[in-house]
Amino acid sequence: MRQIVNTASGGVEVLRVQEAPEPHPGKGEVVIEVKAAGLNFADILARQGLYPDGPKKPCVMGYEVAGSIAAVGAGVDKQFLGRSVVAMTRFLGQSESVAVAANQLFDKPEQLTFEEAAAVPVNYLTAYALLAVMGSLHAGESVLIHNAGGGVGLAAIDVAKKLGAITYGTASPGKHEFLRARGLDHPIDYRNQDWLPVLMQLTGNRGVDLVIDPIGGSHWKKSYAALRHTGRLGMFGVSTASANGLKGKLKMVKAAAQMPWFHPLGLLNKNRGVFGLNLGHMWHEPEKVASWMSAILEGVEAGWVRPHVDKVFSFDQVGDAHTYLESRKNIGKVILVP
Ligand SMILES: NC(=O)c1ccc[n+]([C@@H]2O[C@H](COP(=O)([O-])OP(=O)(O)OC[C@H]3O[C@@H](n4cnc5c(N)ncnc54)[C@H](OP(=O)(O)O)[C@@H]3O)[C@@H](O)[C@H]2O)c1
Image (tube, rainbow, N blue to C red; front, side, top):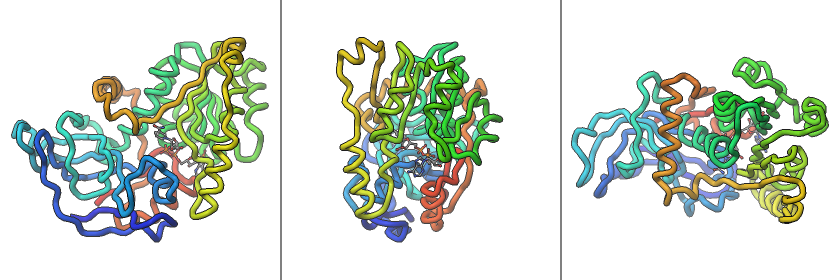
């Protein structure tokens, strides 16, 4: 079977499609024949050598797949065979076949294509955890979604609308029309102007109840300044560091040096909260993640979860897929198919 291998850290030239032995299901596992695999920003950072959670290179990335069950291991009901499923994978998802623990599987909703189903787990679990769980967003509250046009961003709009919140979102200006059509109340161009004064003007100088920030470094300080009283800041990424080679390493050092410190008394006197989320550090809490995923899959049935696949690339075009995401062209999800 074929898989996408990160042969080293670097530009897209380090990505290769290589042959590997078929995986065999261990006890309690199934093998999924992958029809579609999600591409995430973590895959970009991993390729660049800036993702500490990634496996040692050479490695195969891939946090999520949709496909059908081709083999079952000991202790797994044979009736699973042939079932269409969606799953989180702790890497190796960008392969034609991948072994996964049977308790990590969810039935693929019938109304979704395999590509759409593969667009659900990482984006929607992240958005759901940030807004509904840790951010405790309530009806009538306001939320600022940074990179609202990205994969997590579009999912966050869906979750925020479901919760009845007023939505503000930063995005490259070419994405604003699409975002308005998706239900974003206030798109803000953050590429050609400073977004903070614009947000303050839009909110009558009050700020918002929740900000979700995947940019990191000094940007977290700025997002913190956008909170009104009882406001919360959710930090979940450092895309500001994205770059190849030495430049990326230097940008990561700069981002680390510029991260804000939050003093308890400052939080207390301003009635503010801060939290972080790393979905990749939730493998030991499968029940929690499964309960979030159930709510999300119910949302697919109910119609408020609307995974949007922007572009599908074949495994052989993986370099183009990375470039597409890195050059900010994507609106929503980028998917890889064998
Ligand atoms: N902690 C977690 O558990 C977790 C889980 C999933 C994702 N994340 C983080 O959430 C963020 C979004 O992830 P995603 O997979 O949904 O990707 P994504 O948002 O689709 O990523 C691409 C988009 O990000 C924006 N962007 C901002 N800074 C960028 C930069 N330096 N280079 C390229 N694009 C940049 C661009 O949109 P605009 O220019 O229109 O803004 C671009 O189209 C990433 O930082 C990722 O690491 C964290």
